[in-house]
Length: 560
Image (cartoon, rainbow, N blue to C red; front, side, top):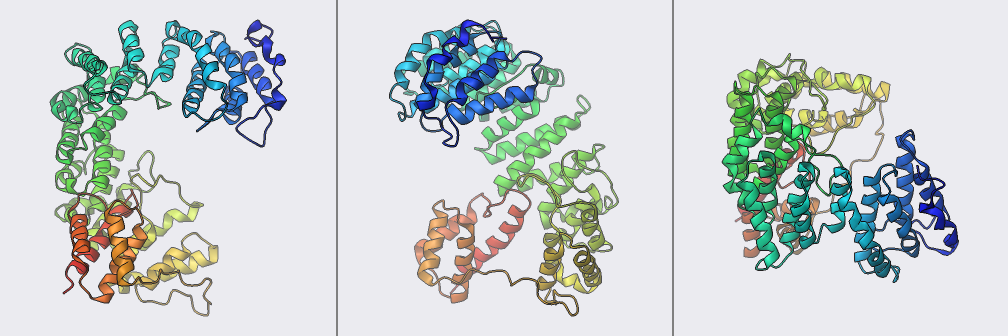
C-alpha cells in the first residue's frame, strides 16, 4: 500500500483543474483522487473497487486516437505505480500505459506527450527485469511493434509462460518489417530453432508465429499440430501453462489454441476440415476418450461450416459419427450441425428420429438434443418430427422472458424459422398453431408475432376471430429499376455488405425478366461459385439465407 509514501507526493503540485480529459463530462481534478485510490489499495481491497478505479482512469486518460494534457501530466505517476511492487493489479496499469502509448503514437493531442514518454521510457524498461513473470509478460505490450526489442527479450527471458506470449508477438512484429531485412531473418531463425526443439507447447506457438510470416507454414505443420494437440499427456500442460496473447485478457487453453490453429488452416478449407476430422477421431479413440476434444472438434467444424460451405461433405460424417456420443453437449452440437445441413443429412434420418426423446442439454445453449433432432427432421422433410412439434417449440417460452444466446453459436432455432417452411403440412399443424397463438395473445407472450408470421406464410388469417390488426404489415423495400439492381449486384460482389439490397436486386431482376449485362452475370457466377455464405448472419440463419439466395441467383442467371 503506497498511501503516505513519496510515490504520489507530487500530485498536488499539478494544476489538474485546467487540464483536459477524454470524458468531457468529467474533470481532471478526479485524476489525483483515482491515483491515490490505487495507491492505497492493498490485498484486502475488494476487486470491484480496484476495477472501478482502473475504469475511471480509462475514462479520464486513455485515448483511442489521441492523448490529452491530463494524460501527459499523469504519466510519471502512472509509471511510479507500475514500477512499485506494492501496487495492486499492476498488469492492469501496464495495460493502461500501453494504451496511452498507442494513442500517443497516433501523433495527435498534447504536443508534450512524445517528450514525456521518451523521458519515462528508460524507467519503464525496468519492468522487463521484474521478478514477477506476469509483469514481464504484460510489459511486452509496450514493445509489441519493436522487433529488435522483442528479440532482446527472447534472448533474456527464461520463463515459459512469457516465452509463449513472445513468440506470436515476434511473428506479428516481424511481419511488419522489410521481408529482406536482417530482423526478419533473426525471427525466422528463432522460430526454426523452437520448431526443432523439445518444448512441445512452444512448438505449437512457433507455428502460430510463423503463420504471420508465411501463411502456409501451418499447412505444412498439420501432422505435428494434430499429434501435439490430441496428445493426452500434453493436454494438462496446455491448461497448466498460462498462454496469453498480447490482445487477449484471459489465457488460452488447449481448445482455444486448437481454434486458433483451425483459423490459420482456414486458408485451405479442405485441410482445415480434415484437421477437424482428425481431432474428432482422436477424441473418440481409446487412447484419449476425450469429450472435451470432441466438443472442440464440433465447435471448430461449426465455425468452418459457417464460413466455408464447401466443407459440408467432409464435416457431415464427423457430426453423424457423434450422434450416439455419451456426452450430452457433444450430441447437442452434432445434431445441430446435421440440422443446419438440411437434406444433406437425410442418410441419418433414422438416427435422428431415435433422438426425438433425448433430454440431453448443452452446457451453454438452450433446448434439448430432442428439440434439435425434431428440427433436423423437418429440414430433411421427414414427417416423424411433426406429431407434437408445435407444443415442443412453444413449451420453452412458457417459463422464460425472452431468450439469451450469442448470434454466432449453435442454438435452438426460432419458432417461425422451423414452422414457416412446413406449409405442406399446415393441415396437420394448423390447430396447434392457432391454439398456441390464442394462448400467447392471452398471456401477452413473446411468440405472438412469430406465430402470426407462420400463419401468413401458410396463407392463413393471422388474426384471431374478431381481432383487429394490432400492427401494420411489415415494411417491404420497393423494387429497383434495372440500373439500380445491376449496380447493387456489382457493389455486393465487390465486397459490399448490403445483403438486403442484394436480395432486393435479385428479386427485381427476376421480376423484370431481362437478362442482365455480361459484367453482372459474371459477378453472379462468381458469387454462386464462391465458397462463402451469402448471408450477414453467422448462426443457423446463415444456412437459411444461403438456401434462399442461391436459387435467386440461379433464377437471374437463367433469364433469357
